[in-house]
Length: 469
Image 1 (cartoon, rainbow, N blue to C red):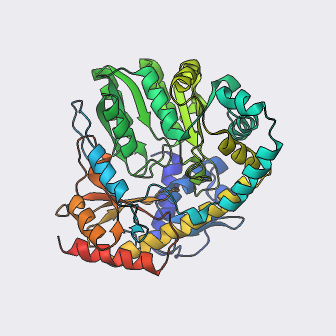
Image 2: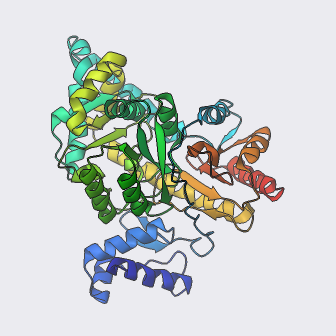
Image 3: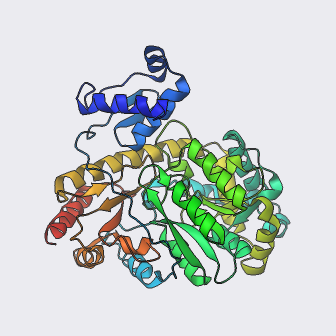
């Protein structure tokens, strides 16, 4: 074990033995560094690991504390073995059935892919749009169409810079959300019939795009805490002519897994050796619960192989559909393909977000959003502990707004989905996250909407339905 892993296990053992009790403050980074004779960096890595394990929680300007339900949390899901052979993809009908279930506003939206609109500053964004359009020169409406709104581009480049990544402006392509960016990148580096390495389980929209473009999937298992299995990926890259790799290095959907910096370096070295482009889907980058923002694989990219895709949809402005790609060596091809399809994202939406970012409210909003999501995660985990059957295993992500539940194998999550929907509760069944429709006894639940008595009753309903299998 590495030193930070050893130190993390030492703290975890103190928590399990109740030497450090739920709610108790643990040593600060400075105190731990002095007491244990290790560097502050090692302490940070250990605490970040404990956060991802659901054992501790960071509180702004207060330090780290043992989570109240740290000793009662169910175990984490296992890593499922995946088939070696390439797979044809056919999940769209399943995915659309889940999406259709969310149209009824009376349904508890545990299957939703977006947080609740109540969590976003929509009124302030509307004010920013009005103000920004009033100040926008008439010529910019057309002039900004191809490159994107100039001020928005500056704000995005600034955020990259503040996170330690100096990005060449010509790399940046503004898109209609992250999904368009990912779609364009995929089209630029593949042809029908090509193989694409994806995660298992994977975000269902990535599977839908592979299906749409006639691509075949090579599934790579994902550890619920540590991310994609790099040994399996290395084996697949050696065995097959993989043309692209699509993954989330941070807060992976649906598991919430994150690669640490060492794993990111190893991943990039693998892709660079095989000259395989990476589509890095980083839509949840701003929703981390820790004290330090994660750096993407793009941070290591010295060969232009990484197409880093982000969006404001999950953290600020759902429905505005403004995203981007730092496209590396593929920037020109991606930009031209976008011009041949959608031409440009909405200029008013870009203007609104640029004005909002320029006025300095974004980071304050993000701090509040992270705090809210962290509280809602704790509420859902506690409810799962109360109502779900023995043997249920649940992820404890260090951010985002999804929990991945692995139920006892007797449970059929597609049948659970149908029964729950009849009782006014939606969820996302495991098979929609797999090219081979695996994970049949698993489901993704969203804690992205405000937690209410209705949410609690919905968890109790799911527990009752689960007990019937």
